[in-house]
Amino acid sequence: MLQGKRIAVTGALGALGSVVVRTAAAAGASVAAIARTSASKASAQPSGVVLFGDTDIGDAAATDATLRAIAQKLGGLDALVNIAGGFRWGKVANSGVDIWDEMYKTNLLTAVNATRAALPLMSANGRIIYIGAAGSVKAGAGMGPYAASKAGIAKLTEALAEEVKERNITVNAILPSIIDTAANRADMPKSDFSHWVQPEQIADLIVFLLSDRASAITGALIPITGRT
Image (cartoon, rainbow, N blue to C red; front, top):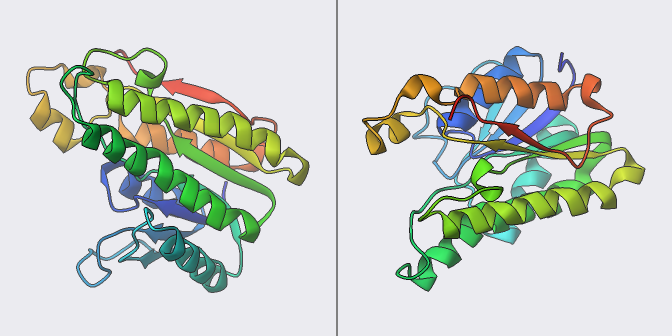
């Protein structure tokens, strides 16, 4: 489905990112896996995957350099999948400004840096995909800092889709609820894990959005919430 596609993935060694990298490579893509972890400390990557480690995409200059290196290595760039991010819980009344700043930098600024670096390198008919959050539509107590940063992803998606539509680049965001990861199970041990979204389900949706079959979909905020 993705034969010949050259794809960069941020947050590529995380619980979701590693599944997306593996799934995209299995679908025929050449994948550049972007991560903060040093390549020397990371496990071996699947065939078709090149790891670009030691990259802080919170740093605009470092991100620019990495994306240029990726385009040179792969012979161009067809898609960017922004998975890097994080979560901090904090109620508005007693969460420090540092948490809000961290969520903004971790979830929104990283996506902006990667996007700005990728756009000049991206081919026509390119693809940009963000990981937003279902909580950005309806946030629960204690999710203010996280949900606000992910709401920024939603508006970034909509605005950028309009800006690049003449280049036939599509821009979409996926809005998961709780993803079934080891970390989430440890944080919520009494939950019914069978109701959560599997990383593989999100990866399958991403592969579809990267494919030619999704060329008419842009500016979409797509919920994937399982039974939560």
